[in-house]
Image 1 (cartoon, one colour):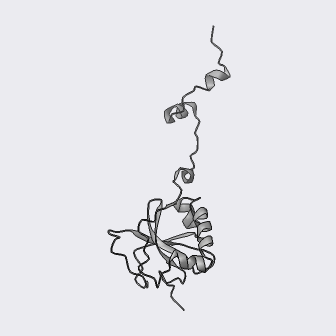
Image 2: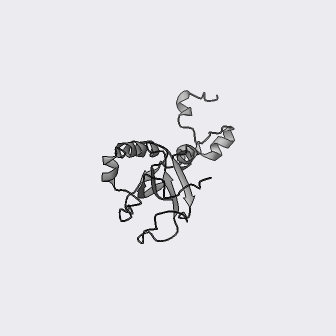
Image 3: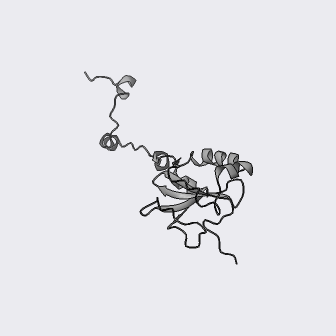
Amino acid sequence: MAKRKSRFDDKFKGTSPSDCRRENVRSERNVRDDLPKLSLNFKDFDTTQCPPGQTFEEWQEDGRLSELMKKFIDVCSYNRIEAEQMKLLKVYGNFPALSLFKVPPHIVGEVQWGTIQRIGGQKPRLAGYIIGSVFYPVFLDKDHVFYPSKKK
């Protein structure tokens, strides 16, 4: 006499890829959900280049600091790919040749420079570099001089 299968038995069915292939069942994985969300690390933040950069106190006096905090919350809810697609994060690669800033001496090695954008307007940016899913802010740039756009 054959044993009848109950719903209880299904709960302990294998879920390895080989089991799924045998059962002709395939579970889809959303790669974007698997990527870590962006985070921030201020270990290399530099206020020695003010101007052209600014301090947090200057941004607070101008009313930009609260916009920056809101942007942190927004950006950190996405992974790197999503943030770039939404134009919240722009990765340039090398340090921009026409920048009014200079690479701080405490940042060594090759890093991918970029900016967190759209901080309460078109111009204000947080410039820094990114490694994996961690953005390292280096400069506050209210006048868009880290990577100035070419005027036509």
